[in-house]
Image (cartoon, rainbow over all chains, first blue to last red):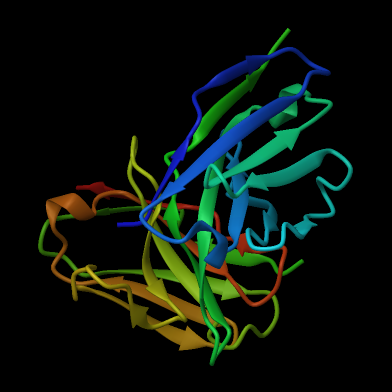
Length: 123
Length: 107
């Protein structure tokens, strides 16, 4: 079945960057978009952006525009999310998720999700 | 951005109970509303998509309803494995936005 496996936890210093990977299996990677989200401690889930895994086009939340870069490697069935200029407020669990779409109705939902990658930003 | 207001933030119930979680959108979103379950150490899992469609493999004790701005998730005959955190999400437009979690605990 479809599965997304994320890279492991990271500890970064303020000002650094982090790059998280999300490896897909069990389906054709380039058929479905991959979205990235995060959840900071005590906060609700927050959408960061997505990538069209077929042509590589991306769209980012305005909140993260200029600091987030989402890419993919189709030969490795893997999507990546890089977040730059980290601050303590970026301490969060980061998730990738595949977008499922029913084209006739445009209904869409996220399934499956990765387990999440904890990123801790601390000096 | 569309604001999603979910209530209650926590809920205590017993096995066999019926519980309802509510989600309200700040603007009309038709039926572009999904519900997820999240357990510690596991990936979030979709339960209901398009407001009322049950995801394959999800027990029928889970049901969703609503359209426009008001939505509900109902869990009938609570089972021990249902004690978890639940989120609503609007998929009408990006940025996708989520409700604040509802933590369902055993009474």
